Amino acid sequence: MTEQTSTHRRTVLATGATLAAAGIAGCTGVLGGDSADGEVTANEFGDDIEVLDHGIENAKLGGTNSVRVNVTVTNNTNGKTTVSASADLYDGDDVLIARTGPSGSISVRHDQDVELHPSAPGRVGEVARYELQLTDPWSS
Image 1 (cartoon, rainbow, N blue to C red):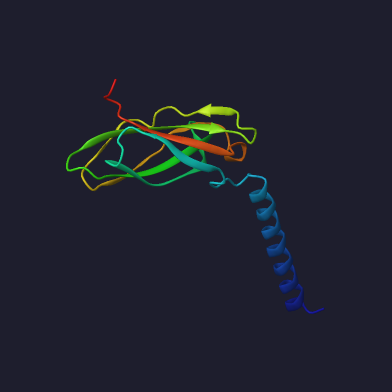
Image 2 (spheres, helix red, strand yellow):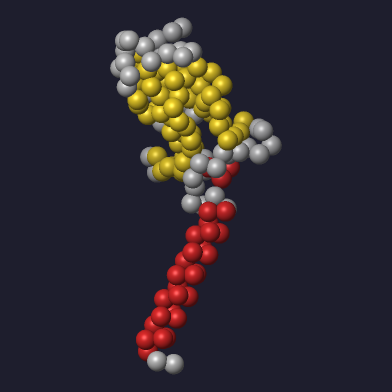
């Protein structure tokens, strides 16, 4: 075997091993990603604040493994509106395993898209589904 053939063979084997490891890690939830089903179960704003997109991901927040819910909303009103988001996280047996705190209030101008990020300790691999709530932090 020539040195060029040997080097090529090692490169192909190393690449294959890396891809296999990444595939296994992805299947076990080690790498994260938004594999859980989610739905908006409460929106105090009706059509005034529209959810454009949402999903979950693993995050390291304050040194703690966390599940972060990423929510993109838009303001369909003519004025400014303050929005907060939270989520309930459920496991495969439909047991509530975590409730995120509110994302913090964010002011959304007319026709502006913003992201909210409520989070809770945990890992995406533990979450089978989540329920998202949008609230007005100023309502009682």
